[in-house]
Image (tube, rainbow, N blue to C red; front, side):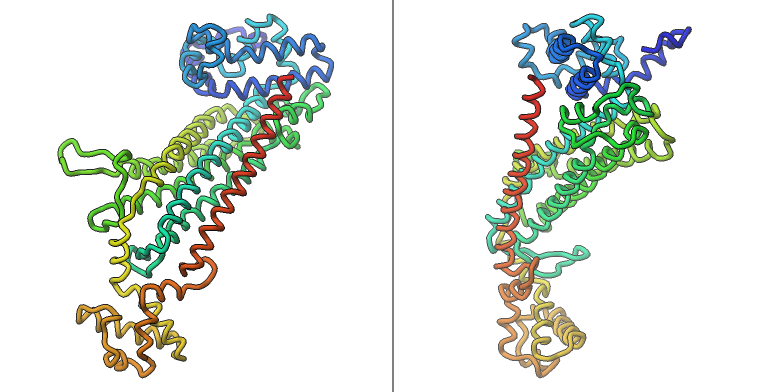
Amino acid sequence: MWSGRFREPLDPAFESWQRSFPFDVRLLPQEVAASKAHARAIAAAGILTDTELSKMLDGLDRVIPLSVEEVTKLTPAESAQASLEANLAGIVALNPQAEDIHHFVELQLTKLIGDLALKLHTGRSRNEQIATDMRLFVRDAIDQTLDGLLAWREALVEQARSASDSVMPSYTHLQRAEPVLIAHWLLAYVAMLERDFTRLVDCRNRLNLCPLGSGAIAGATLALDRTIAAEALGFDGPTPNSMDATSDRDFALEFTQALSTLGLHISRFAEELTLYSTAEFGFLDLPERFSTGSSAMPQKKNPDLTELIRGKAGRLQGAALTLATIVKGLPLAYNKDLQEGQEPVFDAADTVLGILALLPGFTRALRFRTEAMKAAAEKGYLNAMAAATYLTYKGVPFRKAHEKIGQAVRLGLETGRELNQLTLEELRGFGEEFGADFFDAISLKATLDCHDVIGGTATHRVRDAVADASRRIASDTASLASKKSAKLGLESAALV
């Protein structure tokens, strides 16, 4: 590609080592789409005639099927149905001369339409090409991740609805704290996923500008109408600064960082399920189809899925850190270091999509041992906060109420009884404010319903929260469907 400048051929070992085609081959659909958009822009600038543009677009449409056909040896009709992803390694093996995805498309296009293909690089640089391809890849990956998040949110809400008014203990410092509804616990993860969802939507909105026309660093040397390529690719407009556009990887950083946060939430969920499924807790049965046994101990059922996704959260953290480390300290504009930033993005996207392909079905298959969870919620003085609140309503300052209930708990611990098993006479030894209505005030139902605030675990509040979560899922689903419809319309128009 730069043979005019160099007298000496590349060292063969270096040439092989520095190739990015073995991993950026997966950008083939994005590269073809961006190349078609650029072809339209240079045609509008007078570089291609209408006939040449038509031939160029037709050739680009045939680049992907041709690649598959070369690998699979299928007929053209069969190759059109073949999975590109399944053949990427074969495409790389059959094209050792291709340095990167841009070079590969140019070579393939030249086979199809001859020297006309060499006009395609007029007015553009590989710097803007990879910046565009990566934005298109991340945008597609975000859309797929959003679909997966919606499916998992829906599964969690379904479980919350099924759990109804079933109770479990909640924990702080891994010590029993207060009783909550199982649905309330599940909705805590729904809340996390809603934040993950909006982070990805925000990332998508920010990245949706088109670098094409930025040239190598200073802008295209042709008077290109940059809005042509931007509109053809579904971007909101062109990037405003050519130096930033060719070196910017903020969108990839945001994406991997958002996925690392999502991974943390997934890992916390996995950790709790792993704990709750142990004999020591006994709160739930993990589905057998997502578990394995021990090669040595016949009785074992190991929580493989939860342990694996807990481990993969570390992989997501690593991808985000790797990319941040690569970008840190790079001078403007493009540097070859950025080539190393592609694989962490690919790996993070693949890792999350693999997890989200399993989590909805796994979540729906969970079976809670509601009686065991309720029994645990009725032991360990989880109604102590409700008891202190009872005294507060009797006019006792909360600090004093806290002290009196603490004394009652101490008596219970010393005599092996819960608060509701102490006698009224014993309780009045800590204060005359205790009345016969105290025991109703610290019942399990009353303890739940005293948290009657928005976001609390009062029964009717949780029912409302489940309904609200369902409505937000429906709204987000409709929004994504609208974007997909617009995208399909854009793709159909691009074929004309």
